[in-house]
Image (cartoon, rainbow, N blue to C red):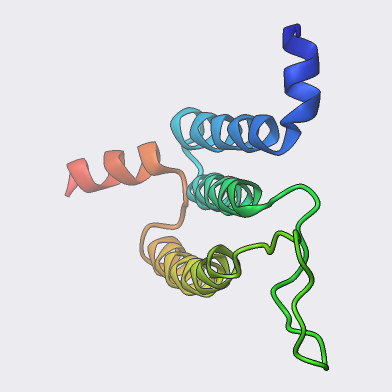
Length: 126
């Protein structure tokens, strides 16, 4: 089995790694604070994708008991816990993003810019 078959077979993991790398690159290469927040969100979404991909079972079904209460034999159920954790993580990520955006607004009001290197220069002049 060559590398392209493995990548195609495990594409959610590959996409997650690529997204995480894009987020890290955005954080490290940009001085604009809004772009840094976007990079952090891209990294968070990559982690969410990785958790959901790791919890998936090929051919698995939702863990819902049928109306009659009879469970079919030989059926694999997908674990619902990672989906619940990702949902909680999304809510926390949204809250942290809103807080970070409010800080960026206050920085803009105080310094007149959202470029981190310009804010450092202005602070060093004080």
